[in-house]
Image (cartoon, rainbow, N blue to C red; front, top):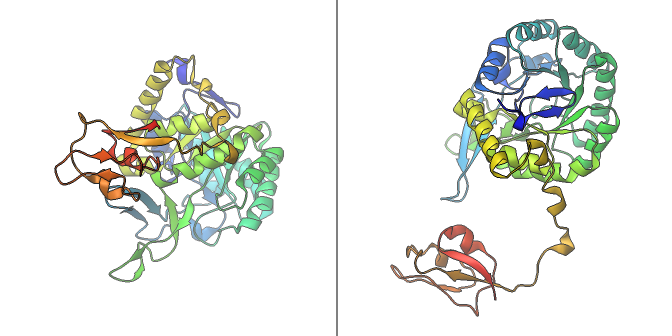
Length: 385
């Protein structure tokens, strides 16, 4: 592989920014090896948790939910996948086995309950050969759900204790999105010594079966991820990145190379992938790497680093948005297929389109909102009045 996608991340030299995230897909040395063979540049092992109830998976624990406005459905991936099935000693042995089998960096993932546990858990992972350690002071399910007001102080102590035990090995922290101000805590955690910030852990979610009138799967709250979350994560990354000295690792909803590129443009240095591996297999990595490579080449960039944060200067403030209202829709007769969809969604009654006839915009009624252009995607475009 060329150096076009190579990145430096918290002291780790990665062949590209796409990492296998902590999940059941990275639960042991065998699955870490699969991630390497598929083309991921690093692997975050499944978290070891001090809270013993979270070491055992309930059944069933996965659900793919397809919902939304008909014709615009989105996918949510709900899971109640718990932690590594063992204690810290077994986890350290897993780190050692993974180090013997694979060459890409191995990032251990540690999730503790007691303040005094972060240091020994981190030390065990470092002594086993982990290249980095990610502390996870939150969990979307189980007894270990942190309240928003509690997460920040707990996370700060976790970073400080883990750094003390890790020596020269980099330590990152995985944030929850369930905070009033994620930017504030991202900055605070960086100042506390975090070598990188992972944004974000899954959010808690719930789905009700209308037939049984009960929660689906195991019958309770589950982690809620999938493609729906990408825009929310991007919003916080692009807000936090200008204020951070520590790099960001983005995670949540990545399903294609375009998601990777957008996360990088918002300011992330690496991007972690999990739900796509569950739903499509480890083979998702290769097309992501190829797509990103082709995009960097076609953009005339010398390397992927030029993408990182490139969108940040172009985010407009509230007062800078164009509110002139000097726009209207126009229909290209050669491209209109006479489907009538545009007429049905125009709340201003600005489009005439009888069954089987060509659409026509009434300029004096058109508000210029742009929705018809988005729905059509073919024959309608927006122009200045």
